[in-house]
Image 1 (cartoon, rainbow, N blue to C red):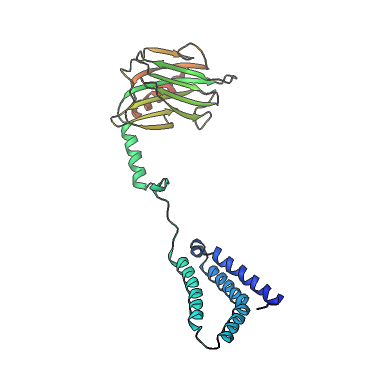
Image 2: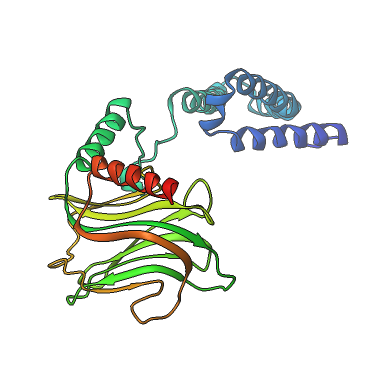
Length: 294
């Protein structure tokens, strides 16, 4: 059964259309562009039929003449049903199959958007914590900090207990003010704020507050300048700070007497409990009056 070049070209084009149809036989494309998908499938199907029609017609004639009768109709029916089944399967997949959504079993993490009620509840709980004094550490200093042109930590203070707890405030080598709390087991919990008006400003008198307070089920760290919170961190569970006997201390360096910072200090102190927002407000007002009079 000979075929001319034209028929071979048509069969090749039809085969290419069939391969393209099979490569597109997946459900995701239909979801985003259903109209475009139907158009592409219709066009490729038409090209497939057009390309193979000479071969099918010639084969049918050859088989029909050779058989001399019509006993071959079941085979033709099977061929037609096979093509129809393939087209129907592709259509079924496009319409009914959906890509699976990420699940926890697949290693995806779901991040629900917090509702306004959740955000308000968290804000209220934080506000409640700051209306009471909690066991921990609190430093309140009226200070004017200057930068030191060296690449290292520059400590404003570091206090410690005989049990190994530490509370330190310093300007890091990366120029971020850091309040670092270490529990008696040596675990460290930092909170960082920017250097400047949005965090801790330089060359300006401020009241600098740094606190860590342990509640029954959480611990908070915060930095206030002056009386306004510029940094906050909440840690699950209560930090183990021991007896909070902050007898070991250094102002202007670390506990080893190194890594000094440059600043002027008007006054201040440390406490074994956090200060309420009301108390901090009174301290800020007092130091503002003091600085204005001196």
